[in-house]
Structure formats: C-alpha cells, structure tokens
Figure (cartoon, rainbow, N blue to C red):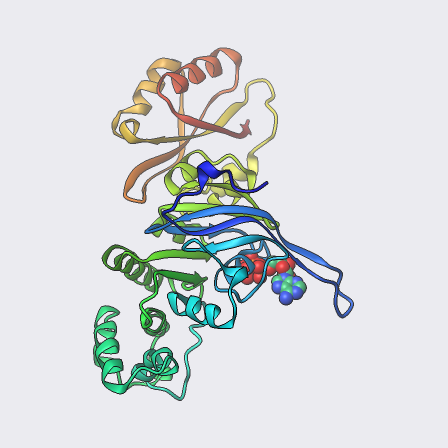
Length: 358
Ligand SMILES: Nc1ncnc2c1ncn2[C@@H]1O[C@H](COP(=O)(O)OP(=O)(O)OP(=O)(O)O)[C@@H](O)[C@H]1O
C-alpha cells in the first residue's frame, strides 16, 4: 500500500512511501525482511517518535533517511527530494541538511569539545573564522560554552550528548535524526536532553525524528508517534491520541511499562481471564480533557450503587495535555457491570478490562 495522497502534504519533512527493506541471505544467515511496506509522513516542525521493541526495524528506517541504507522497494523523500535518486554529490548535500545524534555519542576522543563540533564544518571547507562564529553560539545553546577546550573523556554522558547535538546542528540542518540518543543516560539527564531537543525544535524550527524503545521519551517530547512492530507500522497518530486510544497490542504492551501504569504485584498475580461467580472485574479507565476535572469516582460509585475499589491511579501529561489513568474493581455480575458500562459510555471514558479477581 502506498501512502494515500490525502496523507502526504507539501509540509512533510520526510515521507516513506511503501518502503521495504530486505537483507539478503549471507554467511549462513537466512534473508530477512527488516521493513515491510512502510508508509509514513513526518510533518515539518514536528517532533515525531518511532517506537518499537528491539529488532523492530527502527534503526533501519532512520538510516534510510540519510541514505545510509537503500530501500529494496518504495521511496523515501526528504523535503520532497527522492533520496534514492541522488548521486554522490546530492547525498553529501543531503547529509549536511540532516543532522544525526547517536546513543553512544560517536565523539572523537582526540578532539576537544570545540574540535568535535567544528569537524563537520572543517570537512565542508569552511574557514577558521567562520567556524569560530558558528561553533561558539552552538556551545552556548547546549550549555557547554565553558567546556570548549575539554576532551570527551572529561565530560559526563549528558554533556557528551550535548556536544553530539551541537555537532549535529553545526551545518544548520532542517532535520535532526535521533537514534536512541537518551538510552545510555539516567532518567534525570534524559529529561534535560529532551528539554534541549524541545527548545531546538521550538526555537530553530527544526523537525526532529527520533527512534526509541522508551515510552517515557515519546511521552515527554513527541507531538506525533508511529509504533513499529516486526518491520510494520502498526499504529500512528498524534501522541496524545495514540496514548489515550491505543488499539494495537504492541502499543499497549509498550505503554504498560510507563510509570504509574503498572498494577500492584498482588493484583497482577491474582488476575484471571474469565469471571467466576462472585468475582470482581478489574478495569482501566483513561480520562482526559474535561473528564480529568470531574469528580468521576464519586459519580461512578453513585451510578453503580455498589462498592468500587481503586487499585491504581495516575495523573500525567502528554504533550502538555492532562490525562488520567485509573484502575478500578467492581462486581462482575451483569447488573453491576451493566450500570458501570453505561456510566463509562455517558462520560466518554475509554475502558479496558484487564481481568477478574476473586
Ligand atoms: N545489515 C543487516 N543485515 C542483515 N540483517 C540486518 C541488517 N541490519 C539489520 N538487520 C536486521 O533487521 C532487523 C531490524 O534491525 P534494526 O536495527 O532496524 O532494529 P531496531 O528496531 O533498531 O532494534 P534495536 O532497538 O535493537 O536497535 C533485525 O532483526 C536485524 O537483525
């Protein structure tokens, strides 16, 4: 399936159109399809996340954008340009307009902070003075102006990634690719790097395409998300919508790892797939927008007219919008469940039955 014309806009920074990538058999390994008919548009100015488990095809997808991999079939467009049709000179220009940051930073240990950020400009043949003028403000932007003469070994992981970001921005790209850029960092440093990406996106108008296996990263920083599973895009949309109305089992599995989404161990252990007489049903409610501000629980108890237990709950934000997730249990008998379901429908709540407990 190619991407329907209605889903491609002139404003798209990247378009994958029916892209497949097959690695041929080699050295005893059988042939492998890493990407299968992927169609996806990345809106200009967005921070788009591609999330999936290990081996899902994320790195392969991102490497197609700067021509490090070639599709076996289908096309990749960057700013409307067909990457597959570029000659060597065209590919060099493309790579200057697409910055990339990596999980392990890929810095040169023999070069100072300044020297690492200056490298792509030296390669491009820029003169010393112009390089100075370009690099200094970039070091300011990433908060490392006072470290310009230091070597990577003298810096923390977060500081190394800041150099990586400054280096990626040196050639003034329009698109920044991020390959698991925070996966090697602790949660606090991760948040500070994500905050920097958000600032760059807002202040420089840069489109960011990031791949990650961490839902926390997607939640914190992306406006749009695509979920990839075994080389196929299984779900995509605005991050808020995908998080609050996830349809695919892989998305749900990835979401279940988020802090606050987990069931207490004792409840999770006792969950059964079917109800016996006298059991209680365990339901996850997701509420957002106006619903997040109403006293839902007291209304639910009033409507159901029976005991409702709260098992777990979290209030959070996705892309600046509040949403809540609450796990409740109530009688699984037809009368109680029927009343509860009517209440959920009337109040526009998204519900998911997790199982039954005695
Ligand atoms: N050059 C290659 N030759 C053969 N198979 C490859 C090659 N590159 C990747 N693959 C296979 O394609 C699949 C997707 O790999 P890819 O690196 O894109 O996944 P990923 O989602 O980025 O995983 P991870 O999060 O572990 O990095 C994997 O099964 C991998 O073994």
